[in-house]
Length: 283
Image (cartoon, rainbow, N blue to C red; front, top):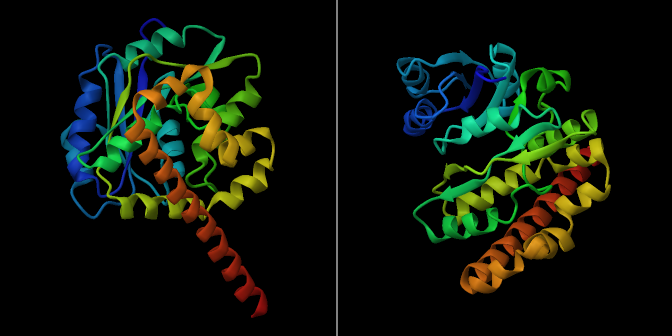
């Protein structure tokens, strides 16, 4: 694995504004034996053409991100694959760290720390919140050995918004004697959502949570991922992280207010789904 080919897979849809920066960050890695695979969901802008002009391997595939990612892995020629969103860029040392860490057979997959960038205050609050989730059950691994990823059939195409958590659990089940580690170098998520857009996205994901519970049940991990105690309390104080809350009281208060709004959206989404099911049953 000394000079392994690494396949970095980017999923896109109408992503013209982001694609060049994303690809450039991969080409600017200190590690050079990389192929870039772009799987585009039939964009209506010039995303596909831009990716082609940047000398990426470009494929058209839908209907959702999970299917696109799985297809990219099937097309990969590398022994290692990684998945990033098109509105992300990689720190220049990420891939070199990935290759070095995956030399260890006791490591089955890798998380990458995520920094959220954006002009609005909400994005700064989101970055503060996201920093507590690294290498927890709220995180999602991004780099794998291709053979391992394919052996567990990749992302579940019936999930949307929880597919990363599902993949982590499948990896941990299939390779119970290994661990998921984390790189030191981060990726940068270039979000620029206002509050309304952020809550709408959360509502969209919440509509698919039932499929995750049907698959995994209400076990210890699920309770951590969705339960009040871990999501609103323990994840922010474990392993000495409480010191960060005390050091940044404005961000801490704003984060909890944002978490409250997300909780309200989740409850309203569940009520709306129940209402739709009730109407359908009556018909």
